[in-house]
Image 1 (tube, rainbow, N blue to C red):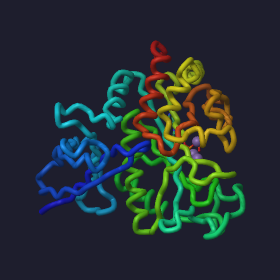
Image 2 (cartoon, rainbow, N blue to C red):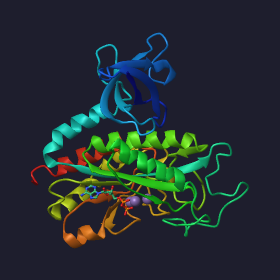
Image 3 (cartoon, helix red, strand yellow):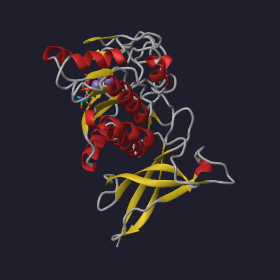
Length: 340
Ligand code: ADP
Ligand code: MN
Ligand code: MN
Ligand code: MN
C-alpha cells in the first residue's frame, strides 16, 4: 500500500515568495525522505546548476486528500554543502529562536487576505462593473449583501483543524471579499510553519471554487483598508508584568529598528501604512493602549491586567512570517535579557 506526501516549499519569487508543491508517492513503511526540485523554474537556481534540496521540517495530515496522506513543509538547501538556500528564511528563524528560547516567546499572527474572482480578478462581493457601498457594514457581518466566500472560509477552517494546526479564529474583514484567520499562540518558528501550511490550504481549497486568493497588502486603491498580518507577541516576562511590556514597545522604536523591521514586513508596505485605515504612517513609530492608529497596540485587557502581550500592527499580509517573527524575537528578547 502507498500514501501521498505533498511537499511544500517557498520559492524565490520576487518580491514575495510563494508556495510551490509537488507530490511524492511513498510506501506505507517509508518516511518522507530528503528530496529536490528544479530551482531554475522557481527563481532559485540557474539552468546549468538547477537542483535545490528539499529538507522536511514540519509534517501534518493532509485534510484535502484525507486518509494517511500528509503535507510535508520543507526548508530549501543548496546541493553544494546542504547549507540554507539564500531564499530560506526559516533557518535564520530557528537560530534566533534557539538563542532566546529561554524567554519562551509566543506569537499569534492575524493573516488577512482577499478573495478575487479568478476571471475578472475583482474582489468577491464587488459588482462586476463598479463598487459596493463603502466600508462599514462588512467587518464581522452576516447576510448575502455583506458577505462573500463564507463556504470557502468554513472549509479552510475545518481543514486547518483536521491538519492539527493551531488556528485561533476567523473573521470577515472591513472590505467585501476580505477575510482573516489567526494562528497561535505558538513559538517563533512553529507559528510561521503553521501560517505557511494554512496559506497553502487556503489557496488549494479555493481552486475548486474558482476563487483566487491574494495576500496583496493593498488589493484595491482608494478608501478601502489594506490587508495586514498583525503580529501579537509576548515573552514569559511580558506575560508576568507590565514593565517588560513597555520595554518591548520601546525596543521597537530604538534608532534604526523601525526601518529594519519595515524592510522585513512585506513588499509595498508604504502603500498600506498611510496613517489612514487603522494604520500608523510608515515613517512614524508609535505605541499606545487600544490605539489602532499606532504602530504597536497594547490591548486594553493587557493594560488592565498589567501583563500579557503586544500587537505589532505593521506587518503586511504578504510578509514572510519567518522573517517577521525573527525580527520581533531578536529585537524584543535582546531588550528583555535579564528580565526573567
Ligand atoms: P484583534 O483584536 O487584533 O483582531 P485577534 O483576536 O484577531 O486580535 O488575534 C489575537 C491573536 O493574539 C490570536 O492569534 C491569539 O492567539 C494571540 N495571542 C493571545 N495571547 C497571546 C500572547 N500572550 N502572546 C502572543 N499572542 C497571543
Ligand atoms: Mn484580528
Ligand atoms: Mn484584521
Ligand atoms: Mn489585530
